[in-house]
Structures are given as structure tokens and as C-alpha cells.
Image (cartoon, rainbow, N blue to C red; front, side, top):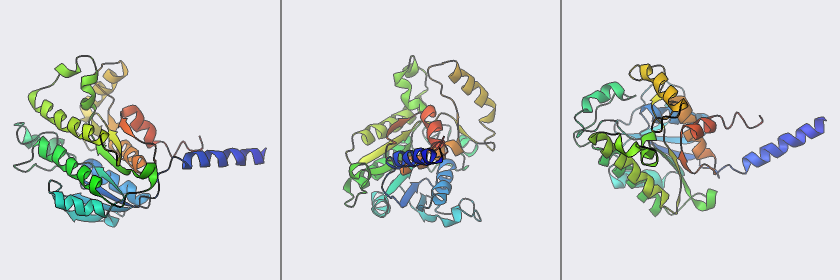
Length: 282
């Protein structure tokens, strides 16, 4: 009986390990000081990765944090191609968590101090096109030109992109009709990135589409979370269940770790991915 149990455990381990990507020890996290990015950095360090956190500030957002203190913090503008190229050339995988909810053309930019997890204000030229599309296009272009690619998934470069649930609105009933002008631009930038990722032959893209991202410090969204979750549960077509930042960060790390994480990940896949290691022997 004991031998049979050992055999089952061994087979489970081998099957699970076959999905692991080849060692991608150096990971660049663009937007590493942000709400999502810093949580990803923490988890990557915990998994033993050599992490470079890239942001406009280039400083540890929580000095004294045992995990974040191990990140190499780099001050860099991801809208600059050369900056991105140098970082990607020294990385085996990357995460793009750069973004903002309200750009300078929305008329709502000052609200970012409330809704942004990092509490940052966008610069004068911080439009959705520059912050989302241009920065990610620079990352994609740098990967496409990179000579030494990893050996996992037929040599494809693992790249995780934080999109949004609303990027899938065009696929649901009435989804294309329920949005103001600023949101149209926000979604256009996200979708253009998704399209470019899907057209790349050198990238293993994991595209995360969370709805509201939260933790217990996000007082701006806590009141509406139950309404979102109930609406999602009863099947309102353009509302997805909310996602905790810890859950999303865990799922993003799995997108680096596992070679079979490809394509769009909605809240159901995000939740499943975040528990993947825990379910290894379940």
C-alpha cells in the first residue's frame, strides 16, 4: 500500500514537472513599485528568482521589507526603447504591470491618488496610449530582437501582461455599448497590446484580465466588491468577480513558472493558477 502511494506521488510530480518552463531565473517586472507589481516582485523573490523592478521612481516602495529589499530596483522610463532593450537583454522573462486607470486626457487624473494602489499621479504626457500601449510594445519589440531566448515552450520568452476584464467586453452581450469615452481609449490600448502579443512567434504570452483588484487597504473599492461578486455570480455578462491582489500576483508568478500558461486568464483561471502549487498532491 505504501509503495503504491509513493508511486502515485512520484507520477504526480513528474506530470506536474513536465509543465514547468525551463529555468528563467532573471525576471524583469515593469511597474515593479506599483500595487500589483510589488506583490509580484515579493513572490518571485520568494520563489528564488533574480528580480529587477523597473519604475519611474526606481526605489523600493517598502524599505525594510525582507523580500523587496532583495529586488534590484531600477529607475527607468519604459516609454524609452533603449532603456527597455537593455533590461530585456538581461532578463529571461518579464512581467508588465504598468498602467493607470485615469490618464491625463480623461479629466479624472487627480483621482489616481485615490484609486491607484501606489497613490501616484500620472505625468503630463501619461496617456493610455503611452503608458499601456507604447511601454508594452517596447517590451515586445525588445523580446522580438533578443538573440538568446530561453529553451522552454520551444524557445519562447515568458511574458505576463496585466490587462483588464473589460478588454473582453466586445465578446459579451451589450459589452460594446457600456462605456464612456475615456474607457474606450483605455480598452483600445489594452486590446492593441493583446493583439500584438498574440501575433508574436517568440513570446509565450499570459494575458491576465482581472476585474477590480483589491486588498483590505483599498478602501475606495471595498464597498462595491460585494455588488461585483454577486452580479458576476448571477451571470451579468460584463461584470467579472473581483480579484485579490495576492491572488493575481500568485497567478502571474505561475505564468512565469509554468510553460503551459498561455493566453487569456480570466478570474476563474487566475484563481485556479494561484492555487496550482497547493493542489499538486491534492
